[in-house]
Length: 439
Image 1 (cartoon, rainbow, N blue to C red):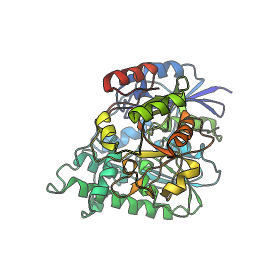
Image 2: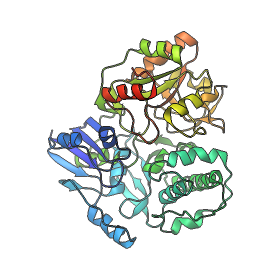
Image 3: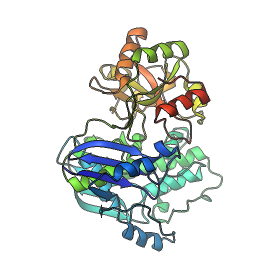
Image 4: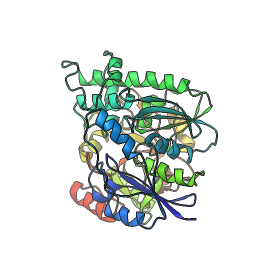
């Protein structure tokens, strides 16, 4: 079967995916190569891989996007690279979810800031049945509030989500859903607390999400688009079998564009699809954690998606108050929470509520380990299954034998505003700069 390349670029989070028939042979973020956070252009390394493809697919319709950008007073975007076929932005989102999902019959709900004109769409399998169009946009509003509270839009929305737990939803933001928010809303409620604005937009998003889910009659539900990363809101959905491809934003649509060429279920195993390194020795990692409480891991293939799931992770001993220590290493705001990675057979002893292997939901903690618990008593749990291919499974098994605790703090191996470590060289530089040993 011919090699298919799908790519997304031009706006933020450029990415490449390569398919050989239904096998995903490679998927990567441009930023991991260029070391430019959120890089919007494919890197030369990716372009060299793409040049070997028989068919190249782009993740949206440039001419249709141009009509909307002209309408909204934005500059026309430029393109660097050519392609053989293109697909609609929301169609690529939907396809990335549908063709990797563990079920065949489903509804797909796509929510993002904006593609060409669609901002929300509902699908019956791969047939679009309803959509909401610009300027109405949950994603644009969330990004505008992210900017309003002093964070970076299209990047820091997850920090806004974490900040919401410190505030009260006292502001009615629903009128802004109909406004053009491309330039933000920096003069909104000038005396408001940032935490209250974050809580208000989070509450509104959760309410609207549940309304949209109610419009999806099928038991199986795929969530896609950048807004599918809102794990707090996802956790409020009841009565559905949910699949979220671990890279639901624009970068993941590189996979969606390639899948739309193939139009068949893909051989999805896990999101470890990027740069490959030798497998780390789990015993070395456990010894380092016992000695220094913190250890970096750069092992096997890099994750395709924004979450570190054990192959490009910074691990820490959650038995101690290490949250501030790790936040200082990563140059992050001290209020921000960290996630636990736990052996699946012990997950329900330590947490109650929805959880899976991709950190896509929040659960209530049933333990006293504050380093992996948010101020509201919840945690974004990574359940590490017995068949997990990452070295993280072996690390946790040895860790449990040594300490009697089946979990560790797990965060991405990077510093704030920098991409995750990708190569062995990146790992060495991380150790030199920040004094954390990486295996």
